[in-house]
Image (cartoon, rainbow, N blue to C red; front, side):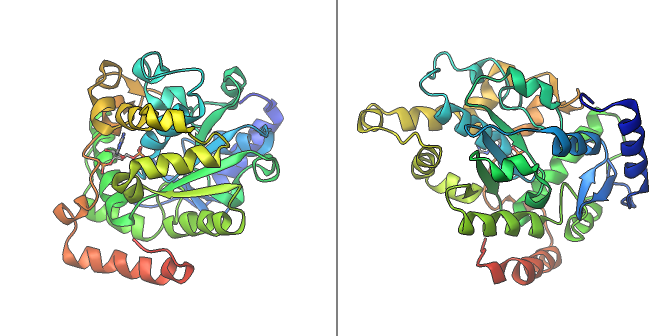
Length: 315
Ligand code: A3P
């Protein structure tokens, strides 16, 4: 880790080893760090990022829990923010996966960020309280995307099963995965804390945090793209609207277009663990009906009711 000497590294290793760890089969194991469950593979980078990262006022930070629409948001936000540099015929999204164009802090270490052209766009799954202070205090903007937890748990199960298969590990059941999710011990969870905290922040500081829902993007991509453009200070001009720029971006970033691009059909990402194509599955709202039992649905709905509805969040 850059900026970390051997002594620091030892201290970080010791700290990580002392943190509570998940039990059960779900891999990677997660450790409880600053009240959230972090995949152990990402924890050293998360800690380094917190300690050393310096945000710039013009940065845009995309935040999500895994399987909430991160890939889509990366493609959309990058296209909106960089539309004076790239159009749909020369955008890097045609030749690189959205996760290569907009890096994750906790996967790719931040020295790479220095190579990003201004205005920088990058992503993280880190919960609000654990973001580096410079992100909270600078004028950089945060765009958060959330998704109905019923669909997120199904999507994340497919994703992990696929990843495990490509790593030649044992599959695990949806039941076990669901249980871990409901206990909040998965992917930077508890999911309810992750979502409600960014939601609160978006209400208190609407110019700092834009809160989006996957379902709203599915329903009205044009309206949501306008929201993003205004939020980042680059509203679409009348000319652009009449010229069909919004539709062009929506089409370029659609699941179908991205999934069919040669660059997204093969190859691996994120430390060569994950197949690029596994980021593009069905992209449907309500796919949970095909996978969750009525008692699973009741259980998750009661968690949503108890932990999220008091904040005014509905799915
Ligand atoms: P499903 O598994 O329900 O199909 P993330 O990008 O956060 O990893 O989330 C992945 C989910 O978003 C998957 O959902 C995937 O199919 C969907 N997705 C990926 N790219 C998309 C796009 N361009 N438009 C809509 N959904 C997309």
